Amino acid sequence: MTPKKLESEAEMVASAPHPAEPLHDSPTAPGRVAAWSGRVSEYFASRLSITIVLVLLVLAGLPVAVWLDLRNLSEDVLTEQVNELSSTIDSIRNYYASNVVGRVLAHGEKTQVLPNYTEVPGAIPIPATLSLELGDLINRSSGNTQFRFFSDYPFKNRAPHAFDAFEQQALERLRQDASARVYEVSGFIFDRRVRLATPILMAAACVSCHNSHPDSPKRDWKVGDVRGIEEFTINQPIAAHIFAFKYLLLYFAFVAVTGLAFIGLQLHQSTLIARFNKELARTNEFLSGLAKKIAKYLPPQLYSGIFAGKDVQVATERKKLTVFFSDVVDFTSTAERMQPEELTALLNEYLTEMSSVAAAHGGTVNKFIGDAILVFFSDPETRGAVEDARACLAMALDMQRRLAELNVRWRKRGIAEPFRARMGINTGFCNVGNFGSDDRMDYTIIGAEANLAARLQSVADPGGIVLSYETFMLVRDMVRARPLEPITLKGIAYPVVPYAVEGLTGARRGAEVISEHDTGLDLFIDTSAIDAASAERVRRTLENVVAELKLRSANSIS
Image (cartoon, one colour):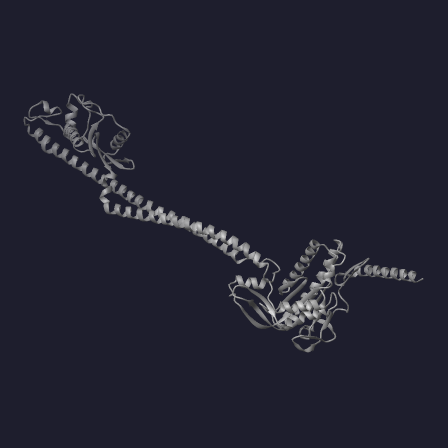
């Protein structure tokens, strides 16, 4: 661009909003929200499952606990009942033997005690017959209580009893210890059964009768021998007592209905939340992609501020900024010699690299004006006027160095006229903020100080950097610069003295990077990168080039 054209464009840009483009994609807030909402959803789903399991355990645990209580209660009651029944039967039999049979036998009354007493008028049964008939009576009158009296030595006129395993073991144990009481508890889920086996002990009257009776299979009985066993069995259906706990059952029904309703509600809510999370994830994914696209039109600092929740409104403030303006020398003529596609790719690569350098130094890339770049420091964030100016100058030096490296790359790709840029830096007060309307606004700067930065770059040499006096005073400890002829600018009443940067303080005079390109010439030297071992070889190469050029010049003169 020509200086006049560039200056007019800079003035127009500095007084009107333009879209800005960031350097890199920034992490999006919607993306973080999507990840956070996904974690919350998984955590809530996990807690919901635990809640459902706990409710089911409560619903299942209470009936099981009560059922176990009923089972233990049933066993205890049955044991007590069978003991009481045993004592009752023993008392009846002993009373009958002592007070009936004993009296009859002792006084010689005509009443006879016979096993078949029903066949003899006036006869009474012996104790064994009484026990057998009493068992039949009890078994007929009660379905849950049974009593049996039997022996492994029955009289000949009585059918033998078939012993099961419990009865056989009980008889063997009682003959070893007549004072023992043998129990068996059995049953299923809905009933329990208790069996008690007690010994039938031979009394004196019984021994006399059995040892002399013609139907007795054993004639050597002694007092205290165990003739057989008395078996008491009580069956108790647990389910029969369930409805005795009607209030507890009503409570269980209420808890069950409440728990199932709660689970149903939670499942319904879980389904709704899962659907909402899906919709939210899709929305967040869309917003994340949209935010990434928007980020390409905003400076990273401004983009971060917006997604951090800062208010967006039409408002500006006056701040002291350091403004940077750069432009490619003879870009118009370069563009005329290149195809549009090649020029577009080259320009985009140049702007991308320069934006990366600006971002590395904390600069806000405000806009691109064709091949020109406007960057400023101190907004949205500032490190102070001095540090911002130093960062801007360091950025400009790195941009020139990076452009020299790009030129080498481009020359290898066949680009005959690589880019050379002029750069201007000025420090002063500008209006910065959001300009525009409530419907559409632009974040930019306005003021004469921005126009001065554009004017300073127009007086710089290709590949050079020019500072205003204000900027030079802030960075004079880090850079060497020489004053140029004063220039005047519309909006500034006094002449401005530009300062051309010659190098950093403490470094030898001369540029660290030497880059020259012409017909037959492709030279790029980074003196800071040449070590001692290579310096001599580079020097000899340059001396040979100079000697060859002098020889050709002398031959052409002669």
